Image (tube, rainbow, N blue to C red; front, side, top):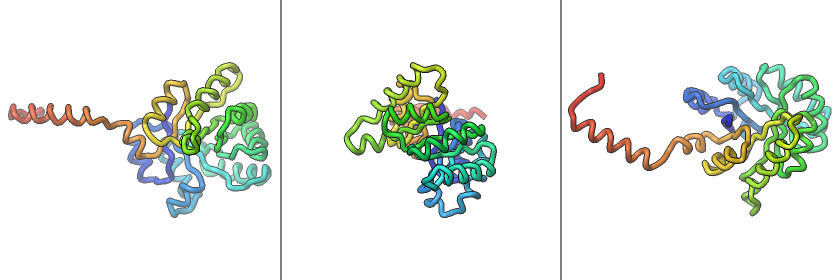
Length: 218
């Protein structure tokens, strides 16, 4: 499974890239606004940090506007992945942008039917939002299972399932077990994946025992 980090915080991205665990980055207008910086500068800087896909989202709501913005975003860096919403206009823009060789991430997916349409439109990634479904009493993982099953039925569909709106490590493990291709995680959740109280307890015990020996490796 590939891991993307869902943030526009350049400092966080640099720090997590040092782990060697990141395969890409996803952003959206809300994350860019939170950074308080110019969108073009932020995207360019992120693309310079990681060679993987960097999702940059359009803000237009009509197909022609999305196309214009998507084409502009692609001029920022070669690894920009244009993010469009799962609307009729977004699917039209996805089809045309993907036909021009662009990577396209179709976002705000909440049903398997939507995911099938995105794949037919040539999406590179489909972003189902599991946390937001959980928030309204639905099981977000059921959606992931349905999309993975449908895509596996049709080998000609090359769209990757990019699980979004992840809230905790259990979402990540469940997505991996279901065969999702990518998980995009807030920085805090990536760090949660590394932690376990028994790991900390075991390390403390090892270090205490080693200290008693009075030795040093170097």
